Length: 232
Ligand SMILES: C[S@@+](CC[C@H](N)C(=O)[O-])C[C@H]1O[C@@H](n2cnc3c(N)ncnc32)[C@H](O)[C@@H]1O
Image (cartoon, rainbow, N blue to C red; front, side, top):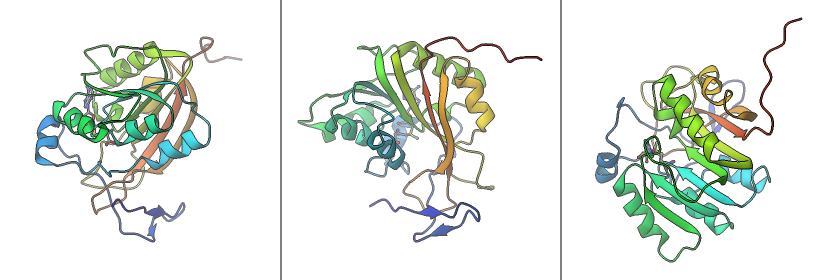
């Protein structure tokens, strides 16, 4: 069972549970090998609490949905059970194999092997795009920008993207998810999408260690283009 840990907002200390964090130390991990080895510290086996909060809070409505880097499919299946019509993709064939095994009999949830940066998911445009720890794995700014552009190009009018991203907040640590600044996140996303909400929180994961902080980033397809910064 995944543990829930609470960070005190001011002291950044944990209450009520041991410290847990994701360990992703390889710069360019062989994702399929990690699934073969069961080296999946991010895979809590339960729906991400930020996703649950945002869906239950009504910030995202059930509709045509794409999950990018779905891993073993827990979040995709949770969305499908709530009436979302989900296409979930992952680069790693073994992740998709595991997800399909979990999905046996599930309705409205299709799992496909796809490199999101190389191929176009079928069945768009999408009302909702979700990724938990996929956008953040790319170290190069131009690749993250390309990722955001591709999401923007797949969103239906009014469509939203929720991305859960490792954060540079939270103090030094040797392990845990990749770390991005808020400026880096916005440098990719703001040129192509409208920011709805960006706030700091933490990742719920399986590994003991320093708490891994996260950016919870919700953006949407622009209804009108952003205007340039003013000069008065
Ligand atoms: C940190 S894991 C998170 C998995 C899942 N979202 C979760 O929270 O359990 C990142 C996932 O992104 C996938 N991934 C990495 N690059 C990808 C790409 N270019 N296209 C699709 N998936 C990718 C990996 O195979 C891996 O499953």
